[in-house]
Image (cartoon, rainbow, N blue to C red; front, side, top):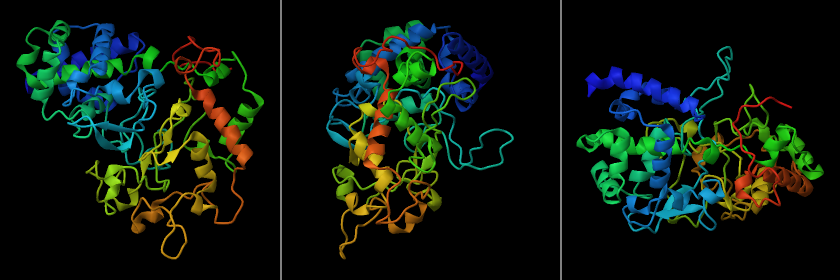
Length: 433
C-alpha cells in the first residue's frame, strides 16, 4: 500500500481539481495530505464527480446499510429540512435495535464544505498573533478532521448505524446492490481490498455532501438581501442590528454575519465555547447522574481528556436554517427558537428560569457540568450580568432577533409564497452590494 502513496497523492490532486471545476468545495488540507488512504480508489479510474455524488445520494438514503435495517443517513439528516433533524427527532434514535437514543442533538449537514481542520490555537490570519483558542473539525467536538472522516463516524457508531466492522458494512453495500455501481466508478477489483472499498463508500458520501445545490444553496432571504434582490422587514432589520451589537445580542461575535473576502457568511466562526446550557433529563444517558458530556474533553473525544480547561466546550454551529429546529444546543435541552435566544439574554439574570432548584432553594446553575468546570463557562456579553439585573435583550428584542434568524432558512425548506427566493440558489462567492 505504501508504494501507492505518491500516485495516490497525484490522484488526490486531480480529484481536488475535479471538485473545484464542478463547483464542489475541495477537501480540507488535512484530507488532501492523507491522500493515500482517502483517495486511493481513484487509482483505477477517473470517475466523474456527478456520478460519485449520485451514488453517494443513493447510499445516504439507504436504510439497508445500518445494523437494524431501519436507519439511513437521511433518517436523522432530513433533506426536506436542510439535512437537519426531522420533525420530532432532535436526538437520534438508532443503534443496532433502531431505537437507542443518541447523546447529542442532530446537526444540519449544510454549509460544512469549508470547515477547517481542528486546531487548538486558531489565528485569524498569518499576521494575527491573537490565539482565539480551539476551532474547526467536524461534529460537536471536532473529532473528525475532514468530511471523509465524518462520513465514517455514523456508519460505525453503536448509537447510529452500528456496523461492527468494515467487512460487515461492505457486505451490506453489496447485498443492497451497490457493489456494481462502485466497481463501475473505481474498478472491477475494488472489493479485493477492504480498505480501498471502504474508502470508496466514504468518498461517494463525502462528494455528495459537498454538492452545492443540495448542501450549500445560499438561497435564503438573507442571501437575497446580500445580493440586493430584496430587503429585510423592519423587525428583521432591528433583529440584525441587535444580533450584531456587542452590548445587546453580541451574536456576531461567534456567528459571523457579514460577507468576508467575497464569501457569504456561514454564521459561525467554527470556534468552541462552554455556554452552561441546562441538563437535558430526557436523554437516556443522563439517567446516570454521574455521567456528563463535556465536549472537547470527552467522553466521545478522547485525545483532549487531560485539558480540563476545555471541558464543557462545544463547537459553535452555523445558524443557517436554525429556524427549522425544534430543540437547541448540543444536548437539545431547550425547545423553541425564541426560548433559545431568551436563554442567552437571561441565563445569568434569571437562572431560576433555566436550572433546577438545589437543596437550599437556589437554582443549581450549569447543572450539566461538574462544579470544578464551571469556571470554563463563558462570561462574554450578554453573559456578563447577575441575578436581578436587567437582561441585555428585552422580550421585544428577542422577537426581533428571531424574526431575523428566520431569514436564514433556505428557499427549498419554506413555502414559495413565504420566501420569494425559492429556486435562486448560487455559490457562496459574491460581491457585496
